[in-house]
Image (cartoon, rainbow, N blue to C red; front, side, top):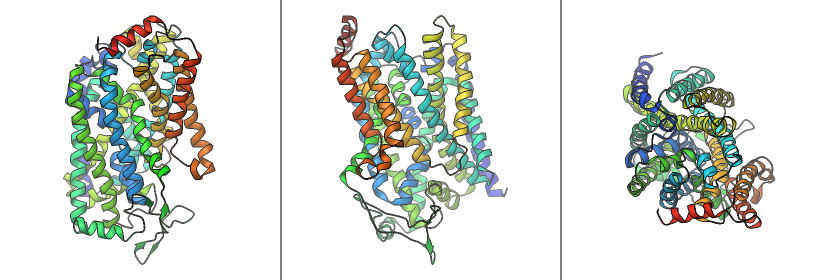
Length: 519
């Protein structure tokens, strides 16, 4: 290990020590009760709510996955995905946040998403709660694996160690931190990490642009690649059977411009629909201390999201001009942020920028692990299996669940050729289609029934798997992002089944009316 690598390592150790310190600071308060551990006692302020929601949402794919897409095939996919996410963020904060905060209190002070859905429909047998918890467990395990892939790629690239060993080391660190501090520590550290992430993005994009010769040079060079800067066309790398891009006389080779129609645009923008079903974001709405503070949180969140998404996309564009043949596979392209940072920054500063990737990964993976653990411990164990379970027993089951989920996620992440963007897109579709339509109908349609809720969840989740694994393989118009058809199918299931089943009880309708009136 040379002196530069040692300096990078020192910077990252300092950062990780600070994160662990936050965990210790909140450990006592977090472990006082399961409500504090899982929801922070509804005590988050507007800044922490906004920044922690977005940091936990974006994860390592913001610094690696999204720039990697732009580096590999140009502007179109990355731009329309980012635009869809920005629009989805805005409408989620605008129409969902206040009513969910109010409704979660009315619905027996719900502290998890399965709690809310179950209490919203006043169910007795726990079917909705169990199904919601199981779907959270499945998709968050996939999500956590994407974070561990990020850790593995980051540490193996920096230190030259094996991907698998570095991935496991990162997973252990995240697990220990999550076990320690719970939701409050997670939210407080996510606030800090959101600042680190956006500073890291800004530093890297400025350095990369200067190295490329300025903004005009970046644009001019990118225009020389067929389809690279088009909104309705896609650059197509010339790859061999192993997926490696060809290089001739030091220049990467490209095929013609790939077609990019309106259907593909809508498919990529459908990423925005996922926000309505994202537990890690929805929980922040439930956890804010005052409903009136959500308006300020929305403004803070939108500024952070727009800046970070735009810069992340541009880093990929700049990276292709500065280091055109550094990464010749789709998976390798996701390391462009690391490459620019380590080659253009002094080692100590590069270490802190690398901490930005670690920040993004930690801020998401601790959220995923914690929410998945709460789904098992609070909703399945205490909610269904052992309703008289004590807080101490719930916390014990939660920690055991954390260990099991982390182990499974590690197994999923063992393949170093994994593409972070692809893993995240599947889990995102799962949550968006399973919970997104149900959340909107639960908050805004009084006629929604318990049977409709069950049909919506099962239909949405099932369609994600069916479309991804079977229908999309047909190609053509069927090769769209699975979230869009699954979201539509889930919505249809909710409406049709609700209208075919008896109307909700008067108590449920009274709850709905009270929340609507702001009572």
